[in-house]
Length: 336
Image 1 (tube, one colour):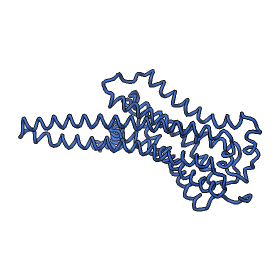
Image 2 (cartoon, rainbow, N blue to C red):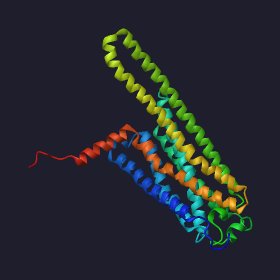
Image 3 (cartoon, rainbow, N blue to C red):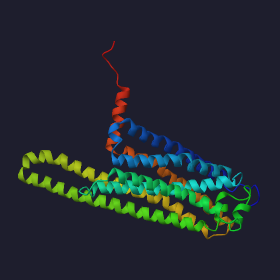
């Protein structure tokens, strides 16, 4: 690549930057909306489920104001004006996004499993809740610090290619590829992602198994009522049977949505990072670099989806929103 030559096409920059801007705005507004609903209704503040969801919302807000804007800057600047500070800040923020999303989704999923599938076990205590929240932030912040500390604290000779590269000849992605220890934190982050994916799948598999068993028991009870009281039971049992089937389908599709959103949106980004580690051809690296931007944008999509999957999909949140909307739009017709 010649000096000053733009590495990305105009259409690519326009589409990806527009997508990043839209995801940043929608993620910021939707997460703030969920938090506003939580704190506006006292009934939603103390519930453990909502505490974990709020923690996820706060982490997503941090990603909206750090990782997404920095990725936006790298896309629109191309190979120009990407300073060392910007490169390290972007690597740190994307690392935070990876680990914060994984840790919080695991905590929310395990808590739902504990509440639904293990309903007869002891509920999560406040001290355990606090510990879980602290662990999610420690993991995310440690992930953000790791690449910066490795690059800045190791010997200058070990990462000479990174420090000697100028901001007008190489993009941040290519400069980070020259860091010897990059493969180690990639392995660490990928290991966390695989473990988190396994935990999420197991948690929602247990939730689905429990929901199906309960549905079978309730349907059996309805059939027993129909046998014992065929006339009265048929009138009352049919609506109840339809409601139970609808509830079972909702649990199934929401579980699949959570799993698919996390795994399908994040896994392409991790795969691309590994592919870039072992390729030296500039043309291939450029294509993979553009793919990494696309897949990172896909991963950021989860930031906008979290408020709807974990927030507005819950009946308590929807009821709280409806109550506040009714209060705000109520008109007193008795006044002249």
